[in-house]
Image (cartoon, rainbow, N blue to C red; front, side, top):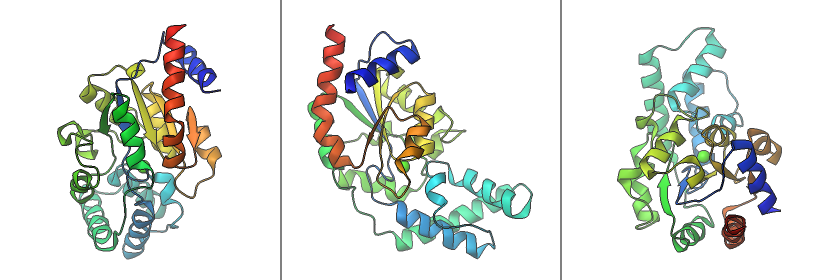
Length: 247
Ligand code: CA
């Protein structure tokens, strides 16, 4: 089953093989169980600025840069573009509020996935739409020696956020890897779209409230209900890649 999925991916992308040397991890919803706090902070921020929204919709925008989410909300509510000052003020409000309410823990099973990836001798990098220093500095505490902070891609490194392929293309460049030399782990539809558009084999973990179909529709090559489930299947995935490469 996994072999067939990889074969279909190779054919669709015109790759001779999948030869991973790096795994690109999304952060919120993959390494941290933080999305509920983000959704709550976004909703309260929108209310503060008289912007119409529902808490649930913020799961669909996950992965976008904050400024692009604000653009979308202001356009929809007021029928005009947000100004640069508004974007900065509203995002600052949301970030401050998030930091105040954030009680997010490392995602269950994420440490196990990282250990599997490490044991497979693959480099580990983070590619996030977040620009919040708070979450970024938590990484080395939660996952000691798992990620090199210099190789992180954040909202500050890109012009176009997810679903544009640029964040994952930047991640590939930092990993010195071609698209067929990496694997992405994502939880959000826009993140999956971004990784797939960058030509990378993309594993979705559905750690939030969205239906699985949304992640499949975004183009996920493999889909797991949790990071624990991915960790449990990791050796099989590596064995399947090796078998295909030895054929
Ligand atoms: Ca995410």
